Image (tube, rainbow, N blue to C red; front, side):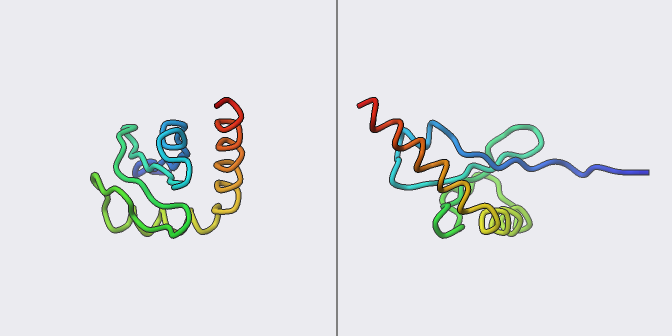
Length: 86
């Protein structure tokens, strides 16, 4: 028997990219698709704690460290596209 205890989603947001392109962040959502926090991609520290538990923070920091290079590359690519449209 397999049980599921919820799902956590980390994502880059176009809204955040447009709002502050020089400050890359990743958003964290709970299994109800509610935003529960934001983390700096550069430092993996909490930027905005809406409803984060300690285990959410540890999980997000681990995932950010593991995927940082890919997320920062995506962020820079999108930032370049935004600048090209200005």
